[in-house]
Amino acid sequence: MRSDNCRTGMQQAPHRSLFNALGFTEEEMKKPMVGIVSSYNEIVPGHMNLDKIVNAVKLGVAEAGGVPVVFPAIAVCDGIAMGHIGMKYSLVTRDLIADSTECMALAHQFDALVMVPNCDKNVPGLLMAAARINVPTVFVSGGPMLAGHVKGQKRSLSSMFEAVGAYAAGSMTEEEVKEYEEKVCPTCGSCSGMYTANSMNCLTEALGMGLRGNGTIPAVYSERIKLAKHAGMAVMEMYKKDIRPRDIMTKDAILNALTVDMALGCSTNSMLHLPAIAHEVGFDFDIAFANPISEKTPNLCHLAPAGPTYMEDLNEAGGVYAVMKELADIGLLHTDCMTVTGKTVGENIKDAVNKNPEVIRPVDNPYSKTGGLAVLKGNLAPDGSVVKRSAVCDEMMVHEGPARVFDCEEDAIAAIKGGKIVAGDVVVIRYEGPKGGPGMREMLNPTSAIAGMGLGSSVALITDGRFSGASRGASIGHVSPEAAVGGPIALVEEGDIIKINIPEMTLTLDVSEEELAARRANWQPREPKVTTGYLKRYAALVTSGNRGAILQLPETK
Image (cartoon, rainbow, N blue to C red; front, top):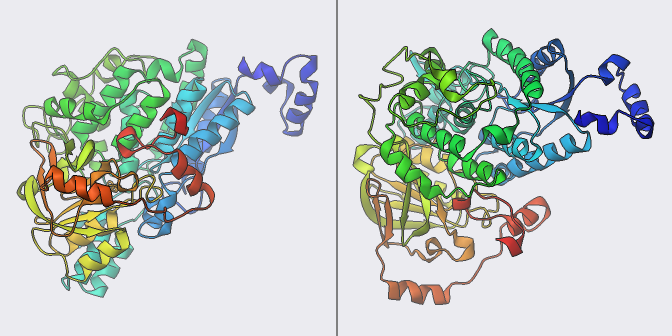
């Protein structure tokens, strides 16, 4: 056992004295030591129930012959961090989570791990850590929130943000906003639509790193507790069979996840996280991979914010496995990939059934013949940009209009709510990228304001920042290179015509090369908005959005 390094032999007698202090018995000292990475805290709604999940995992591990040992991981609630300086500290935690988990696992020589994440950055951060540590590892999330109900209709957090925009537009009263406030988030769990947390928990299933139902069983269901017990048992089976994360998270598995991403209509943030996970296993994932996969993968689900269905509906319809079965039946998945069940993808999904063709469209009746995400390139985004096309209305699939340029999110929100943005405009928010932010803030507030003001079918938003999975509309993010390094988005001027063509996957600034060259010659770098602490170090090491905002030493970029 790896843990023998700190528990066996005379040289390790001092170590054993410390295990003694922890209350370890002689019997436990002879068993595999399983680290349970708990993301529990009392500030994230999706994490407030993780203590119960962790306890269930401990029971499963102990029942299967291991010794469970809990240690923590941090987590940020993106909703609470939204729209202020706190959002600069969200994406950056992904790497903190990966780094700190690597440190804890290797310092204490755990034989196996069970990761218990739920919300946004915990899932990719812990997947990155799993790849680095490479001991038998199973994931079990806290599960999604149930949808709220307002006036007889299911609602979620995206409805709440849009209600604020509707209030600014005068189409909703303060009392109506209050009703939304009290009802859209009725339980613990990751927010109820196909936002980033639920996207990544579903993709963990698709990668093969989580058991069936990991992405979809609601947080408040007892089935979630059972799943956690089974995860504890499963990691012990993996330990016995020596199945490790790098046996599972192969290139083919990551391409499977990208394919499922397209079918589900996942958050654009998956285009940051999948490349970062791929990097940890030595796979150079270019976001341009998305387009050929998207072109052949039908979009089968329209969960909120793209449509009126929610995670609980996807769960009842058969979950991620049912979606994967639809895709596998037309040859779009690598079914021979290993998973945490000890079986292949094909073996896992062979009996999966689509129980509701309205929630999971069959492949012969998709919402669209192409996938939920698209990567747009052009002279405005030479290295790419990302849009959730499944959440874009037909009228905005092709659009051109004048640029309305803002150098921070706050200025853009003020203009939108102040009625200064009109139909046809293309809002540009820059200097919000990984370096420029620093931290690459989500732009849920401005996209929700646009929708709430009734401009969702006539106004586009382009940024070198990123979007919440709750954003909808023609919201194009991750523009690379970002403004802070002199990317073309830094050269856009008020009134420039921007052309968006999502079917052709192009994003064009209608300005001559000669004019752009002149503007480039006059451009001066700007000092980042935060120049102290962790963000200073992060800005120095982070790469662009098209590379997953991974951290690299300057000489290796």
